[in-house]
Image (tube, protein in one colour):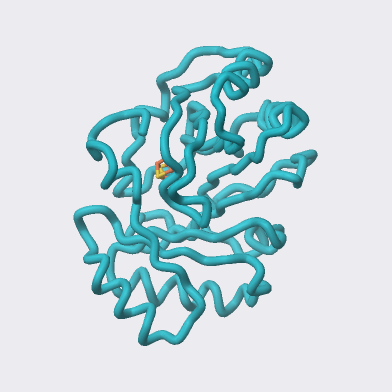
Length: 213
Ligand code: SF4
């Protein structure tokens, strides 16, 4: 059994997979408290689900893509078993994680990790440890949600120290309604770095206050 906040079928919005139809599984619980968190309802709400029922629901949707998100999926002890079952069922599996917790032991690395850098604007920068990010491999990616120029510079410095291979793409997105996407694009262009500018696509396609998108 696994405590699940919600499941839904929507459009992937925040990675190199952005734009693809995707079945989402949102786990309950997160040890972080990001200032701009838009899923605070996932901290405590949820119901116990069997892993097989989650796989069956994923298979009921035609899209090959499944994302396990949160909350913080890495805080769910059942995660490795769920991911293995989804992969064995033929799904492509993404896991969105905060960057604050280490990769769980036994996680089937056929999955793709989308690991956040939490900059100071999130209030969680003190939880970022370089060794957590050194577990990333080609096929994984890094994402950061940027509130202002200080956040942008923090993430560039963090990436410099990591010096990860360029096969691990990096996407920066503006905090919705707070940082101008155009301004962020200008910072990226003048930095000369290989960073993708992302928009939180699901918040443009759907009501940003709506759950399950
Ligand atoms: S890690 Fe995600 S779920 Fe947890 S507080 Fe931050 S934004 Fe919210």
